[in-house]
Structure formats: C-alpha cells, structure tokens
Amino acid sequence: MSGHLPPLVPIVFGSTVFAILGYFFSLVFSTRKSWLGSLFILLVLASWLVLQTVLSISGFYLVTDTFPPRFLCMVLPPLLFLILLFLLPAGRDWIDKIPPESLVYLHLSRIPVELVLYWLAMYGWLPIHMTFVGWNFDILVGLTAPIIAYLILNKPSGSKNLILLWNIIGLIFLFNIVFLGILSAPGPFQKLSFETPNKAVLQFPYVWLPSFVVPSVLFAHIVSIRKRFLTN
Image (cartoon, rainbow, N blue to C red):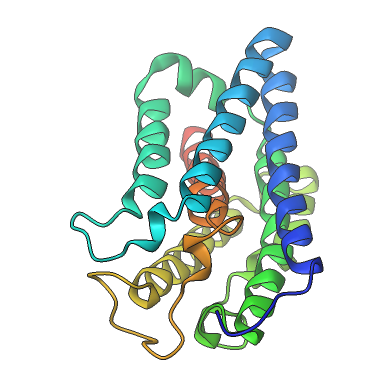
C-alpha cells in the first residue's frame, strides 16, 4: 500500500457497515414482528462479516493468481442468497412487506462509502477512477435518496415512473463501479490500473464492501423495482 490511512477512514467505513447491519435488523423486526427471527437474521449477517474478516486478515484474498479467483468467495454467496430469497415463497412474502421508503433510506449509506473510496484513492489504496472524481457516480444516488423517499411518501402514484427510473439508474451506477473494481483488482480479470490497483477490497475491513455493502444496495434496488411492477 502507498500510504498509511488515518484512523478516521476505517472508522467511518466500519460504522457504515454496522449501521447497515442494524438497519437490516430493524427492517426484519418491523416486518416480521419476531425477535427470534430478527435475531437469527442478524446472527447470520454478523457471521458472514466475521467470516470475511477472518479470510481477509489471514491473507486469503491477497493470493490473486488462482483460478477460479478467490474473490468469488466474497460475492457468490450473497448473490446466491438473494436469488434464493426471491425464489422462495417465504422470501418473497417478506420482501413484499418492506415499506418502499425504507429501501430508499438504505442508499444513504452510499455517501459515506464514496467518501471512504475517495480517501482510499488519496492514499494510493485504489485508483482514482473508482471515486466520484473519476468514473464513479454512485454518490449521486445517495444524495438524491431523500428526494425519492419524499416522493414515495407524498406523491406515491404520480412519481412511480420517476422512482423506477431512479432505481434503474442506481443499478447502472452500481454495476459500473463493480465492473471498475473487478477490472482494477489484481487477478485474472485485471485490465485497468496496473500502477495503482484496487487492493483495498482484498483487505480488512474493506472486504466488507463487495461482500456486504454492494449486495445490500443491490437488494434494495431489486426489491424496489419488483414493488413498482407489483403495484402497477
């Protein structure tokens, strides 16, 4: 790594991750009204974060010359979980109970995450094009989230198409930074940023970005889009 990060950077990032974790707990509890079920979900998510912590601290992800690449251990389990959630009737029943504005509030987490990415780039932990001064427009979704939440609460009928468009654009921005991250990370798929590769997400605590934060944001967008067509 090029520079020693100030303690504020991991503190902001870690606080954001734990805020998302707590938000999911409150979301599950408010829709299921079950402490036991909510605690179980919280335990599963916390265990996933602990597992990623152990793997990253052990240097597991720093070995980048294997095939298939080890970073798949970060992203495949959450994706499979999301697919299973939408396939199972109980999963669909739960996500359909989530208030649409609650899904939008989750995107506020993208603001501190983007600030962390900028700080990481300033200290040489990842390329500058992965930040909001480069090719990453993700922060715009976080900044506009309060407006979308207001429209959902006050103009739910007249703003349906605008909210749908916002979610689609948010997905495009999310996929954009994911692809930039993959193409800039050391490994068989690297095509960009050989001088300043994206090594941050291979280490603790930033391994939580692809393994937890990105799937959380993806979940919020997909559920919002599903709700738009169910209420059409």
